[in-house]
Image (tube, rainbow, N blue to C red; front, side):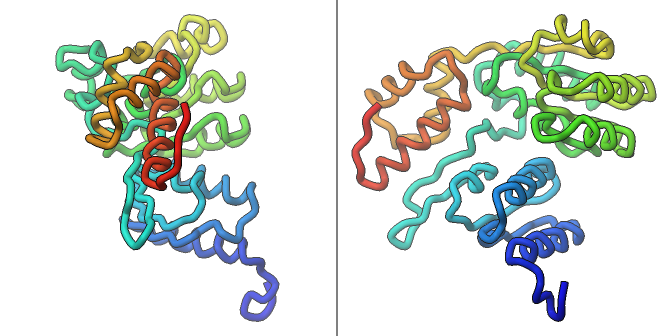
Length: 284
Protein backbone atom coordinates (compact mmCIF):
# COMPACT_ATOMS: atom_id res chain seq x y z
CA UNK A 1 0.00 0.00 0.00
CA UNK A 2 2.89 2.35 0.71
CA UNK A 3 3.06 5.17 3.22
CA UNK A 4 -0.29 6.98 3.50
CA UNK A 5 -1.61 4.72 0.75
CA UNK A 6 0.64 6.23 -1.89
CA UNK A 7 0.64 3.04 -3.98
CA UNK A 8 -3.16 2.71 -4.09
CA UNK A 9 -4.93 3.88 -7.23
CA UNK A 10 -7.88 6.25 -7.16
CA UNK A 11 -10.28 3.42 -7.99
CA UNK A 12 -8.88 1.27 -5.20
CA UNK A 13 -9.26 4.15 -2.74
CA UNK A 14 -12.91 4.49 -3.74
CA UNK A 15 -13.47 0.75 -3.36
CA UNK A 16 -11.93 0.74 0.13
CA UNK A 17 -14.04 3.74 1.15
CA UNK A 18 -17.13 1.97 -0.20
CA UNK A 19 -16.31 -1.21 1.75
CA UNK A 20 -15.78 0.78 4.96
CA UNK A 21 -19.14 2.49 4.50
CA UNK A 22 -20.95 -0.84 4.05
CA UNK A 23 -19.17 -2.34 7.05
CA UNK A 24 -20.95 0.19 9.26
CA UNK A 25 -24.35 -1.21 8.15
CA UNK A 26 -25.77 2.25 7.37
CA UNK A 27 -29.46 3.09 7.09
CA UNK A 28 -28.58 5.87 4.62
CA UNK A 29 -25.64 5.74 2.20
CA UNK A 30 -24.45 9.04 0.66
CA UNK A 31 -22.45 8.56 -2.55
CA UNK A 32 -20.83 11.43 -4.48
CA UNK A 33 -19.34 10.19 -7.79
CA UNK A 34 -18.48 6.89 -6.06
CA UNK A 35 -17.09 5.15 -9.16
CA UNK A 36 -15.46 8.04 -11.02
CA UNK A 37 -11.94 6.56 -10.77
CA UNK A 38 -12.88 2.88 -11.11
CA UNK A 39 -12.35 0.68 -14.14
CA UNK A 40 -15.40 -0.81 -15.85
CA UNK A 41 -15.16 -4.21 -14.15
CA UNK A 42 -14.82 -2.76 -10.65
CA UNK A 43 -17.64 -0.30 -11.25
CA UNK A 44 -19.94 -3.13 -12.36
CA UNK A 45 -19.04 -5.02 -9.17
CA UNK A 46 -20.12 -2.00 -7.11
CA UNK A 47 -23.33 -1.60 -9.10
CA UNK A 48 -24.21 -5.27 -8.63
CA UNK A 49 -23.52 -5.04 -4.90
CA UNK A 50 -25.72 -1.95 -4.52
CA UNK A 51 -28.53 -3.65 -6.43
CA UNK A 52 -28.28 -6.79 -4.29
CA UNK A 53 -28.48 -4.71 -1.09
CA UNK A 54 -31.03 -2.20 -2.31
CA UNK A 55 -33.58 -3.23 0.35
CA UNK A 56 -31.11 -2.88 3.23
CA UNK A 57 -30.56 0.90 3.18
CA UNK A 58 -31.51 4.10 1.38
CA UNK A 59 -29.06 5.60 -1.12
CA UNK A 60 -28.59 9.25 -2.06
CA UNK A 61 -26.39 9.24 -5.15
CA UNK A 62 -24.72 12.09 -7.07
CA UNK A 63 -23.28 11.11 -10.44
CA UNK A 64 -22.65 12.21 -14.03
CA UNK A 65 -22.95 8.59 -15.18
CA UNK A 66 -26.41 7.72 -16.45
CA UNK A 67 -25.87 3.96 -16.20
CA UNK A 68 -25.04 4.36 -12.51
CA UNK A 69 -28.05 6.59 -11.87
CA UNK A 70 -30.32 3.85 -13.21
CA UNK A 71 -29.91 1.79 -10.04
CA UNK A 72 -32.07 4.41 -8.29
CA UNK A 73 -35.83 4.34 -7.85
CA UNK A 74 -36.01 8.06 -8.54
CA UNK A 75 -33.71 10.14 -10.73
CA UNK A 76 -33.60 13.95 -10.70
CA UNK A 77 -31.78 15.59 -13.61
CA UNK A 78 -30.28 18.90 -12.52
CA UNK A 79 -29.93 21.85 -14.88
CA UNK A 80 -29.98 25.65 -14.65
CA UNK A 81 -29.74 25.41 -10.89
CA UNK A 82 -32.87 23.29 -10.42
CA UNK A 83 -34.29 19.82 -10.92
CA UNK A 84 -35.73 20.09 -14.41
CA UNK A 85 -37.06 16.54 -14.76
CA UNK A 86 -37.82 13.55 -12.63
CA UNK A 87 -37.68 10.02 -14.00
CA UNK A 88 -37.82 6.57 -12.47
CA UNK A 89 -35.65 3.54 -13.01
CA UNK A 90 -36.38 1.02 -15.75
CA UNK A 91 -37.91 -1.37 -13.21
CA UNK A 92 -41.31 -0.65 -11.69
CA UNK A 93 -40.68 0.43 -8.10
CA UNK A 94 -43.65 -0.37 -5.91
CA UNK A 95 -43.98 -1.56 -2.33
CA UNK A 96 -47.36 -3.30 -2.55
CA UNK A 97 -48.79 -5.89 -4.91
CA UNK A 98 -51.86 -3.69 -5.38
CA UNK A 99 -49.63 -1.06 -7.04
CA UNK A 100 -48.38 -3.41 -9.76
CA UNK A 101 -49.73 -2.57 -13.21
CA UNK A 102 -51.13 -5.15 -15.60
CA UNK A 103 -51.15 -8.25 -13.38
CA UNK A 104 -54.61 -8.11 -11.82
CA UNK A 105 -54.87 -11.91 -11.73
CA UNK A 106 -51.96 -11.89 -9.25
CA UNK A 107 -52.55 -8.66 -7.36
CA UNK A 108 -56.25 -8.71 -6.55
CA UNK A 109 -56.99 -9.43 -2.89
CA UNK A 110 -58.50 -12.85 -3.64
CA UNK A 111 -55.51 -14.14 -5.61
CA UNK A 112 -53.40 -16.96 -4.18
CA UNK A 113 -50.25 -14.82 -4.36
CA UNK A 114 -51.83 -11.87 -2.58
CA UNK A 115 -53.25 -14.08 0.17
CA UNK A 116 -49.85 -15.70 0.66
CA UNK A 117 -48.25 -12.27 1.11
CA UNK A 118 -50.99 -11.05 3.45
CA UNK A 119 -50.69 -14.15 5.63
CA UNK A 120 -46.92 -13.69 5.94
CA UNK A 121 -46.40 -17.40 5.27
CA UNK A 122 -44.20 -17.53 2.18
CA UNK A 123 -43.73 -20.71 0.22
CA UNK A 124 -41.08 -21.45 -2.40
CA UNK A 125 -42.30 -19.50 -5.42
CA UNK A 126 -41.32 -19.05 -9.06
CA UNK A 127 -42.49 -16.00 -11.02
CA UNK A 128 -42.28 -16.48 -14.76
CA UNK A 129 -43.03 -14.58 -17.95
CA UNK A 130 -41.35 -12.51 -20.64
CA UNK A 131 -38.57 -10.06 -19.74
CA UNK A 132 -39.36 -6.62 -18.42
CA UNK A 133 -42.92 -7.02 -17.14
CA UNK A 134 -42.46 -6.88 -13.37
CA UNK A 135 -41.18 -10.24 -12.11
CA UNK A 136 -38.29 -8.73 -10.14
CA UNK A 137 -40.58 -6.05 -8.73
CA UNK A 138 -42.92 -8.69 -7.33
CA UNK A 139 -39.97 -10.74 -6.03
CA UNK A 140 -38.74 -7.72 -4.06
CA UNK A 141 -42.20 -7.11 -2.63
CA UNK A 142 -42.36 -10.73 -1.46
CA UNK A 143 -39.06 -10.52 0.42
CA UNK A 144 -39.41 -6.96 1.70
CA UNK A 145 -38.74 -6.72 5.45
CA UNK A 146 -37.61 -10.34 5.72
CA UNK A 147 -34.21 -11.98 6.29
CA UNK A 148 -33.05 -12.99 2.84
CA UNK A 149 -30.13 -13.26 0.48
CA UNK A 150 -30.65 -11.94 -3.06
CA UNK A 151 -28.64 -12.63 -6.19
CA UNK A 152 -29.01 -12.07 -9.93
CA UNK A 153 -27.78 -15.27 -11.60
CA UNK A 154 -26.62 -13.31 -14.65
CA UNK A 155 -23.78 -11.79 -12.68
CA UNK A 156 -22.54 -14.73 -10.60
CA UNK A 157 -20.58 -17.83 -11.51
CA UNK A 158 -21.90 -21.25 -10.55
CA UNK A 159 -19.24 -21.52 -7.86
CA UNK A 160 -20.21 -18.15 -6.36
CA UNK A 161 -23.87 -19.13 -6.31
CA UNK A 162 -23.12 -22.47 -4.66
CA UNK A 163 -21.06 -20.80 -1.93
CA UNK A 164 -23.78 -18.24 -1.30
CA UNK A 165 -26.47 -20.92 -0.98
CA UNK A 166 -24.36 -23.15 1.26
CA UNK A 167 -23.06 -20.42 3.57
CA UNK A 168 -26.06 -18.15 4.05
CA UNK A 169 -28.04 -18.33 7.27
CA UNK A 170 -30.96 -16.48 5.68
CA UNK A 171 -34.18 -18.52 5.53
CA UNK A 172 -35.09 -17.02 2.14
CA UNK A 173 -33.00 -17.33 -1.03
CA UNK A 174 -34.08 -14.93 -3.81
CA UNK A 175 -32.72 -15.52 -7.32
CA UNK A 176 -33.32 -13.55 -10.50
CA UNK A 177 -32.94 -15.41 -13.83
CA UNK A 178 -33.22 -18.91 -12.34
CA UNK A 179 -32.80 -20.53 -15.78
CA UNK A 180 -29.12 -19.54 -15.74
CA UNK A 181 -28.05 -21.77 -12.87
CA UNK A 182 -26.06 -24.95 -13.51
CA UNK A 183 -26.60 -28.49 -12.22
CA UNK A 184 -24.37 -28.02 -9.17
CA UNK A 185 -26.30 -24.93 -8.08
CA UNK A 186 -29.58 -26.79 -8.70
CA UNK A 187 -28.40 -29.57 -6.41
CA UNK A 188 -27.48 -27.03 -3.71
CA UNK A 189 -30.90 -25.40 -4.03
CA UNK A 190 -32.63 -28.78 -3.79
CA UNK A 191 -30.79 -29.52 -0.54
CA UNK A 192 -31.53 -26.04 0.82
CA UNK A 193 -35.26 -26.39 0.10
CA UNK A 194 -35.32 -29.85 1.68
CA UNK A 195 -33.74 -28.30 4.79
CA UNK A 196 -36.58 -25.79 5.01
CA UNK A 197 -35.26 -22.76 3.17
CA UNK A 198 -37.65 -20.83 0.92
CA UNK A 199 -36.77 -20.07 -2.70
CA UNK A 200 -38.26 -16.99 -4.40
CA UNK A 201 -37.14 -16.87 -8.02
CA UNK A 202 -37.86 -15.32 -11.41
CA UNK A 203 -37.40 -16.81 -14.85
CA UNK A 204 -38.36 -16.28 -18.47
CA UNK A 205 -38.69 -20.06 -18.92
CA UNK A 206 -41.87 -22.06 -18.45
CA UNK A 207 -41.48 -23.87 -15.10
CA UNK A 208 -42.66 -27.11 -16.70
CA UNK A 209 -39.59 -27.11 -18.94
CA UNK A 210 -37.34 -26.06 -16.05
CA UNK A 211 -38.63 -28.94 -13.93
CA UNK A 212 -37.11 -31.38 -16.42
CA UNK A 213 -33.66 -29.94 -15.59
CA UNK A 214 -34.24 -28.92 -11.98
CA UNK A 215 -36.60 -31.31 -10.09
CA UNK A 216 -36.96 -28.89 -7.15
CA UNK A 217 -39.07 -26.63 -9.39
CA UNK A 218 -41.96 -29.10 -9.10
CA UNK A 219 -42.20 -28.39 -5.37
CA UNK A 220 -42.53 -24.62 -5.88
CA UNK A 221 -45.61 -22.47 -6.37
CA UNK A 222 -45.59 -21.00 -9.88
CA UNK A 223 -47.20 -17.75 -11.01
CA UNK A 224 -47.27 -16.55 -14.61
CA UNK A 225 -47.08 -12.82 -15.42
CA UNK A 226 -49.02 -11.70 -18.49
CA UNK A 227 -47.66 -9.43 -21.26
CA UNK A 228 -48.70 -5.76 -20.84
CA UNK A 229 -51.80 -4.40 -22.56
CA UNK A 230 -52.14 -0.97 -24.13
CA UNK A 231 -54.04 0.48 -21.18
CA UNK A 232 -51.22 -0.61 -18.87
CA UNK A 233 -48.81 1.72 -20.66
CA UNK A 234 -51.22 4.65 -20.23
CA UNK A 235 -51.44 3.94 -16.50
CA UNK A 236 -47.65 3.80 -16.11
CA UNK A 237 -47.15 7.00 -18.11
CA UNK A 238 -49.59 8.83 -15.86
CA UNK A 239 -47.70 7.66 -12.79
CA UNK A 240 -44.26 8.55 -14.14
CA UNK A 241 -44.93 11.83 -15.88
CA UNK A 242 -48.38 13.30 -15.26
CA UNK A 243 -49.04 16.24 -17.58
CA UNK A 244 -45.54 15.95 -19.12
CA UNK A 245 -46.28 13.92 -22.25
CA UNK A 246 -48.64 14.95 -25.07
CA UNK A 247 -51.25 12.33 -25.88
CA UNK A 248 -50.10 12.09 -29.51
CA UNK A 249 -46.48 11.46 -28.46
CA UNK A 250 -47.58 8.92 -25.88
CA UNK A 251 -49.61 7.05 -28.51
CA UNK A 252 -46.58 7.04 -30.82
CA UNK A 253 -44.35 5.64 -28.07
CA UNK A 254 -46.88 2.92 -27.25
CA UNK A 255 -47.30 2.00 -30.91
CA UNK A 256 -43.51 1.71 -31.21
CA UNK A 257 -42.96 -0.67 -28.30
CA UNK A 258 -46.38 -2.17 -27.49
CA UNK A 259 -46.13 -5.83 -26.58
CA UNK A 260 -42.38 -5.64 -25.88
CA UNK A 261 -41.98 -4.84 -22.19
CA UNK A 262 -42.81 -2.32 -19.52
CA UNK A 263 -39.09 -1.88 -18.91
CA UNK A 264 -38.56 -0.84 -22.54
CA UNK A 265 -41.52 1.54 -22.37
CA UNK A 266 -40.13 3.27 -19.27
CA UNK A 267 -36.74 3.68 -20.96
CA UNK A 268 -38.28 5.32 -24.02
CA UNK A 269 -40.58 7.52 -21.94
CA UNK A 270 -37.73 8.67 -19.69
CA UNK A 271 -35.66 9.47 -22.78
CA UNK A 272 -38.48 11.55 -24.24
CA UNK A 273 -38.88 13.51 -20.98
CA UNK A 274 -35.13 14.26 -20.84
CA UNK A 275 -35.04 15.42 -24.46
CA UNK A 276 -38.16 17.53 -24.01
CA UNK A 277 -36.68 19.37 -21.03
CA UNK A 278 -33.33 19.91 -22.77
CA UNK A 279 -35.17 21.78 -25.56
CA UNK A 280 -33.94 19.44 -28.27
CA UNK A 281 -36.05 17.84 -30.96
CA UNK A 282 -37.14 14.27 -30.84
CA UNK A 283 -38.06 11.81 -33.53
CA UNK A 284 -39.61 8.45 -32.84
